Image (cartoon, rainbow, N blue to C red; front, top):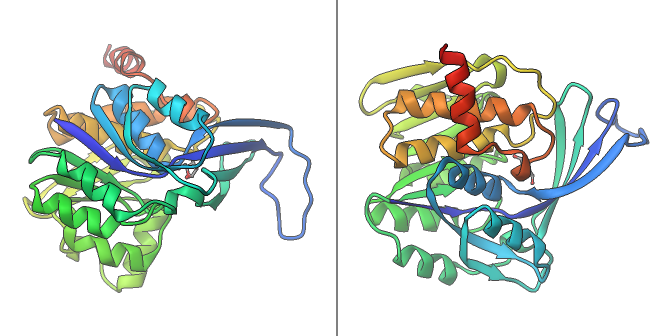
Length: 293
Ligand code: RIB
């Protein structure tokens, strides 16, 4: 089947710092680098590297290299629109422990129309998957169209915006959150996540592992994280979501898809960067084989 992804494409500017800047502080970076990112692009790259057929829907500005890099990972970009505004970008500060703080500029990620999204999803078939995050426009409409077609809809509530989550919730199959987003959602809705009317929930908790809850079927799975030396946690959640979606798309049972995704995310945090730091399937399989001995 195919994984469609209505997702952001960003140019990520990385600054390595001794610590994250405090209000009013001016801080000299220890290093600077640029790479492909965006929660959407990262998820597309992760799913493609996991072995899925991936078609990205989104927007970029007049620059070519972000699109070329995404294509270079085998992601079909025929439905990525060329917009008149600049490609989105992110300023990513990373401290010595690998923690980050990110500032986003949406640019072309919010500069494309619904028509292009509808035209793309016309080519989708029942059983395909749609990935969504909160960095583009048209998530709710896209989720509605996809569900009407019998697609699986996986929504990462990141960056967290309660109104965006509220609008899209009735139309999704799987809600993916990190621990902070899970707390924010519970607090905003005044209810536990297990009371939500969504079929499945995936909560990733960094080094504390991940939890998949099938609210419709009553099954709950815990996946411990693999202990690694973290260099940069940026994009680890995207790597998890993309690998998990690809695993499920290829027919893996949830427990196996969780293990695959946890291994991919563990490898990612040992590397600096975002899309370019996402491991290949061969690397993930080798990592898992090593731990099975
Ligand atoms: O999740 C990491 C991503 O968030 C970065 O690649 C950055 O572009 C922001 O979208």
